[in-house]
Length: 539
Image 1 (cartoon, one colour):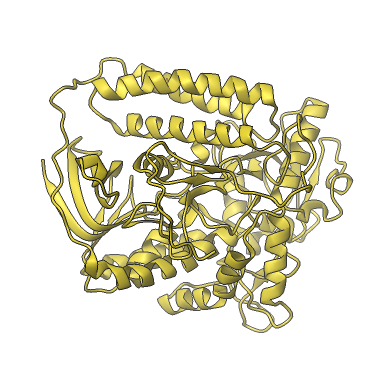
Image 2: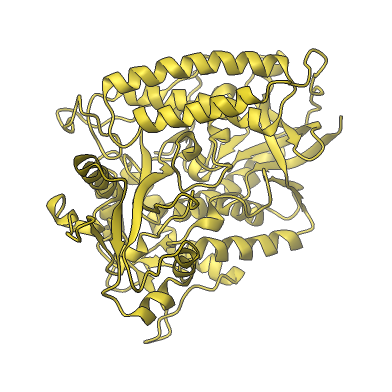
């Protein structure tokens, strides 16, 4: 089997991974690994934009206050201020790279929109396809960089640490990658490994995320000895198109920012009954309100209505959403469209500091895979791309300063001597479907102790079955993802069971009120192989 070696191995090819690669010194040999094509991740699908203070009437303090409010008391204020204050410079960096954000027709400046939880217009965007514009621009720069190698159609099976090789220290040494096309496993050594693998929303039956969002980085970090925090806070986007063929079509929050209303089938608005901010309330409130009305009335969707706006306005501001809806037979300018909530964003993840450092030396995590303390119990709209850009910059600076002391080490070849090809692939597909269904039914928008206990029982059964299957058969991409999904599902369930209150995205009928009798705490899960070393956390 082929063995590869790089200075920096970046697992993931979205905004976080690409930004990091471009900000690292050009003298380093860098590899970017993507499960499919470079643009198959969540960044390419991001519609809304980047939240940053770019208007004279706005301020860093107001952006911080809005983020803290949306996070339901669980954000780390130092982290929030650090990231928010670096937002304008991150946007300027993108503009310098060539990202074309939408300009205002009035003064030619950047057009800023407003989304849920924001008190001001501060979301800079490229029409309604901001992620695509950023992804394409950064990808073009990556392809021109002679020091960066792109490994598409490769999936990471596991990280390799020194402890895994029988040594006492925990330093990461590289990873095993499966070439999806050839089915060969490569041992890839690296001085630094960076997880930029995105979130885990594919653990749920209905999601806005692409197929690759299976929590790979979170699961691999857990197995390598990293602590994981706040996995109970899974964000459900309130408005995904309800249509049997539209599995993941998200209708951007900017629609509601520009005046779209949520209605019941009889045409009545219902959001004012739940929150004074109505359609512009944070996502957890809007998603729970929709879920409540669907269950109360026994309906399978609600309606999103922007027909009161001029048709030209809708087509100009939301050309891609408009075109996508037309493909499914809905004209946004003429009729309300059916929508439902769907799993959208993982607010918890691998615990890191402001340089992206994890518990394992040499291992970094940036973007949605990481838990920084920015999002708290609920991510505010368009803070995610902001976090990707700022953490990538911080990680690049830290890696550049430390990599000189890191050595490359040869890894053992992947051992397939005791496994065979599977003759029961149906086991993988069946378990995949079962897991996503019970996670949706029992660990979704509204939870109970009984539902969580049922979910954990099923997780444990599936975990044993998948572990046995993994031990006896050659790995495939589907098996790797299923193994990671069941790990992430267990982390979500155990985190939810440990929180005896309702806060932000975690709502349980057994503890429906927020517990303000003591300072709020993160839910921190510690793996069995955690070294216990004190990390240089900057929080």
